[in-house]
Length: 347
Image (cartoon, rainbow, N blue to C red; front, side):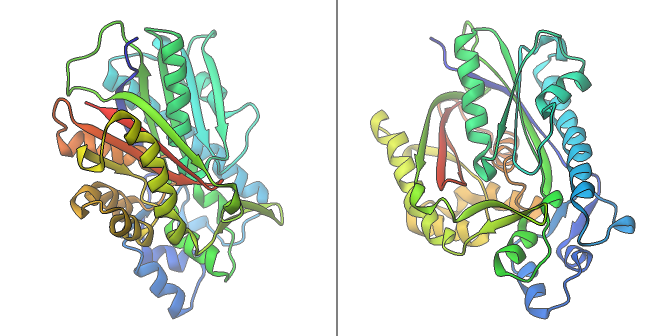
């Protein structure tokens, strides 16, 4: 059977862009120590679904949910339409819509609302993937691939969207300070299909395999908790030390059975969870810094948008790295669980 193919990808961010200095002041922090954390993050800009003129810290749960609902649907629509346009498709051509998100809850879910806003067919299949955090793009892509394999010729619109500013819990604990210094809003979409014949080599990445590693011993190290009716980030400092070992296990499971080595990978599409995580992964796994330039570019210009971020990196690789026919790529992210998720791509 032909491998699923990513026909197109697209990204979307809110129109308002903030520097780290602006975000530090907007949230209401005043400590020079916290300001230094913001400025040492290797992030220059982030986008948020808010207008600073009407923003006040410590919003109510209802205000935060309204921000999530409005922003997530708007950005999902923008990314979805751009991805469909790039693939030469209309909403009526889509057979399945999948959405990954962790920063809010809606019923009807986002995939249903997105189908309605896009004016998709009334028989379009839908699905929501909740709570996978920064790794959400990978299970999203895997479910899209599953549908494509089961329905050759069917088109899947897969969207990852987060409004992290709807989860800003303002306190002075280190994990919430770090989260507030890193996280941002954005959406990314891909169109996946399993064609009768493979496209010309190099024109679009084929999805060859997936690999997951779940380490339940560290389930409490990253995610969200409910506090005062709001989502508060859980981001333990140990993550920077745990990242490389679990990623190494994931890569071994992905590459070794297929006779591949890290040196065979031309394009590393790594989710940039933060500067220190990227530094540690580069050092411990021996991934050349040149391979991380697109991850660092996305981190510097957009911050960590949780689930869409890895697809932002993929979009940059597609646009700027000019993958050659036959190139291998690895799409990889770390998320709650503690889970490492990876996909093997080939152009």
